[in-house]
Image (cartoon, rainbow, N blue to C red; front, side, top):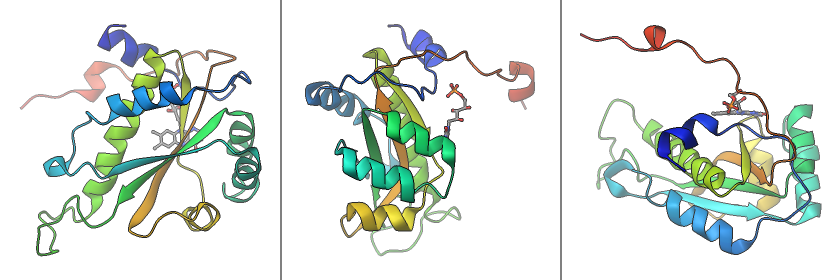
Length: 180
Ligand SMILES: Cc1cc2nc3c(=O)[nH]c(=O)nc-3n(C[C@H](O)[C@H](O)[C@H](O)COP(=O)(O)O)c2cc1C
């Protein structure tokens, strides 16, 4: 698939078939996502794949801040990818001070690029995904016992798509782009 076609045809998918995504395919996707750029090539993004149905049910019921939409998506997905970040590297100098006035925001920036790269690589392999930002970081950290030194950036529900949604309307280039 051509890059522009992959970017434009990727959709947030919330309804999945029961079929599991093979671990070998997930490895290929993460291998591609590893090529995402990062702050000074710090590569702080990690991926924890939750497939255990009991854990998924706990996350769906207790970790989405009551946002029903995400409860349904998580119950329905084949797996939930928890995107985490190694703390205190991206945006930092070696002495622990921030390099720029954006402080530690670069951590989320790196994780965001990596997350989109993951979703595009998944799409190329016929796997649907949706990024989920509405979750309780505190509860999720407790339920999954996220390793010390990492924090959760985002969730990605994945699976083979049951329905391929229409693209929500996009803004015109004239509104998005300016030159100086
Ligand atoms: C940072 C971020 C957080 C999001 N959080 C959620 C979410 O919690 N639940 C959900 O169903 N979709 C979520 N989405 C998906 C967006 O709703 C979706 O990307 C947007 O509507 C555009 O649709 P498209 O991805 O099909 O182009 C999120 C997307 C991003 C980038």
